[in-house]
Length: 89
Image (cartoon, rainbow, N blue to C red):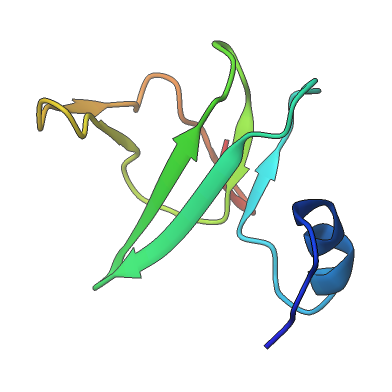
C-alpha cells in the first residue's frame, strides 16, 4: 500500500512502480480523471473531464468503442482510433 496525504503526491509516489497503460498526448490545463479496468479480455477506460479534441494513447489493441453510461449506446471509434506499435492513438 502507498499512502499519500493529498492527491498531488500520488504521481510522485507511484512513479516508476507501474507500467503505464495510458498517456495523455494533448497539453491540458487541468488534470482529468482516468480509470482503467480489465474485464475478461477487454480493457475498459473511463475518462472524465477531458476537453473536446484531446488526444490519448491507450496501451491496448483491437476495436475502440465509446460506451455511453447513461443510454447504454455503443459507438465505434474506428475512424478516430489509429493502431500504433505501442497501442491505440
